[in-house]
View 1 (cartoon, rainbow, N blue to C red):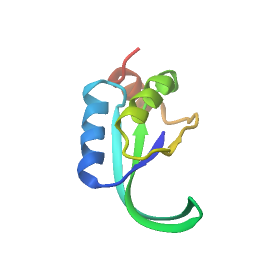
View 2 (view 1 turned 180 degrees about the vertical axis):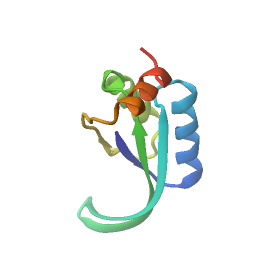
View 3 (view 1 turned 90 degrees about the horizontal axis):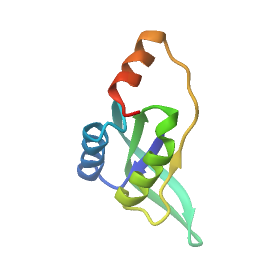
View 4 (view 1 turned 30 degrees about the vertical axis):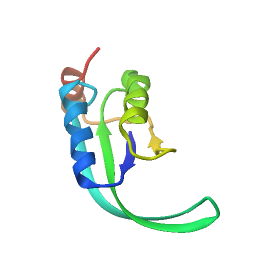
Length: 98
């Protein structure tokens, strides 16, 4: 799952809570520059991309959590099913709830 947050401090807080609550096995943070149209204006912002490595079964829990935690009125929450090397997937399964 991928999302964005306005600043590094908030993104780190979200990442640590995701790990603590066992909603994710790993969370990667990356500084990005985004340009988009919002309310009729072209906006350019620096934000933090949050990449969450988790299980598909936790998708709904992650969406609820992110909607509560993210700063945006309309947060980016993008997810897709992925495949990975067996040992890595085993680690994810052991690290997350359910």
